[in-house]
Image (tube, one colour):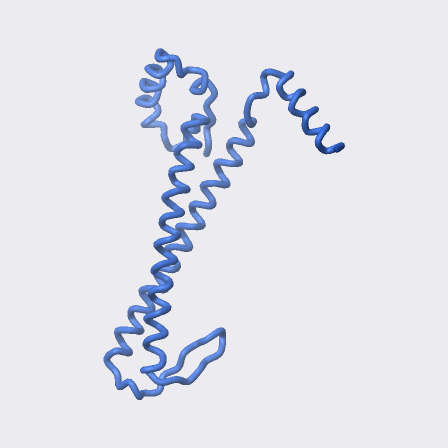
Length: 161
């Protein structure tokens, strides 16, 4: 009960303030930076897995050319295991397929995160430091939006380095 009454009290004090309608500039920048970092980590993971796929392809191509009864070694969970080519080859092909599916999933998530970032940038009018050349073109588009009645959001921009 006490938690419920305190939350309603904070709602009424927040609406009574009037000016506090959204997150502060620091919160907007922190959220934007966090979202960018998430997208970067997904991209690096996808690149790492692409390298794994390439390695699997090289090994699979090499093993297809040798005798299936030939002895080969495989690292499984940090332990080097002796097997034959005919035992290892199907497992490698299966691993490659699984990694490919994971890469596709990560790429889909990256596209979704990119759309979220774009929407967030537009919502809070976030400009990156390297966008100086585009700024003059953006100001012309912003002034046309202001004349159409959408000027309240464009007046509060955030510059992110």
